[in-house]
Image 1 (cartoon, rainbow, N blue to C red):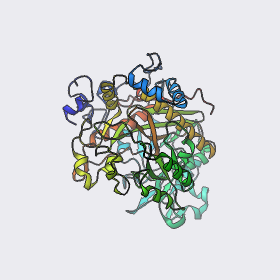
Image 2: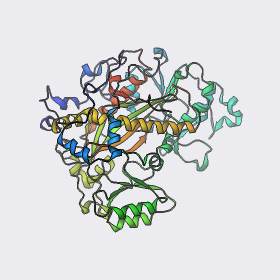
Image 3: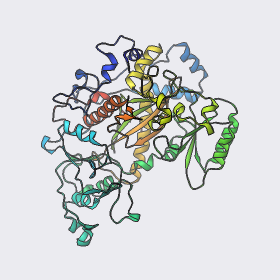
Image 4: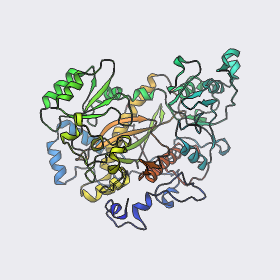
Length: 559
């Protein structure tokens, strides 16, 4: 992003490089390395991770309806439920956590475990996680159990991990014959006094399972729940980065059932069950701007299978009527009037971390990312239906960084610059400059409320699977949110296992214009997450801060 572009994002002239400097990866020093970047400058990142105070952010102003003419016009045209929702949002407090969620571990017990084949293949976070952990003083291992990689799939000898949790030799836990798999004799793995298992839902094969194929599995989290009573010491002496069952809980179809009546979730229909109701809704909307629809598969990622139609398009009716009974998907009311930056549509990726289910604890990272489509937004029929043009409507990198769209992806765009992303702080700065009535808290109060309801839903789903020990699990989620032109925040979806690894250095044969921005964002999120957990608070840390988080308030909710 050039200097002239970055100046448009700030009301004040940037100092010493302004935002350009903030977007670069810091130089290597005694506390950082080239692949683990920090946000802003050293004064910002070296903040203490254990402040002794709570801070209400942005609540000095009286919480009344803003007096701008635009807001008053919008307020008058709102319905009763919409006004009630606005009043509810004004009661949302923006509070920073006053202390880390966990007790600090002894320095010599900072032991972390990654996936068994990480390093042979990029199966988990990739090398960035290792670099961040080592920078923070952790001992790093890929040996929670034995693993092999044949060039196509990973095989994990998960019984070694299970026996380790029980404090048993594999032969004693499973018998002599059960302690041999694929000709490999299972080994005893001593369980340390403390362990951080960065083991989420991973694609691997377990010897002896059906079809001998790899699939996404929650085995590590499920085994920790099953054998957790055999772990010695406090529950917080062992932490795993996963709650069981969250992938299924967050299927778009299940998420829709939970939230279809919420004011922040667009009207959505699940196919094939709700086909008649969807067809009735489409026909009732006529030629209005509310009659645009987006179809999404149940659980695909990266924009796969997405299409947008106008409701009057016969192809939409044909797609709904012809939907295969064996598969499930959703059709959602399309946000036809999104907030545009420089003429481009975008969504916000905001990270939510749930640190406990009972009692429920959750936190939202403030400085997320804004990911843009790379063609100017339009509702022209030439970009919809059978002529669907993803780079005008979809913000996923996979559908924008394509050979046919290379010029648009790499060219410099107003406000955004080259590539397709800026940070949330830049969006806030831009809105403050271009909208006199804008207040940052108006956005974050909405995000915190949506995060609260999302965390409650996830927690209720996890509890149905059985009890989960306090302080033993945590999980990070990626919330994909959009803003409309009135700055209302809408939920698109929530993803488990958000990508927090190294981005590609090259895209389409050219240097990736978002490489440094993406790397910095991922590194900041990992550092902030570990600062929030507080397990390594016994060591001085130069990166990560509690001040990067808002605490979700559940005090007025019966759980």
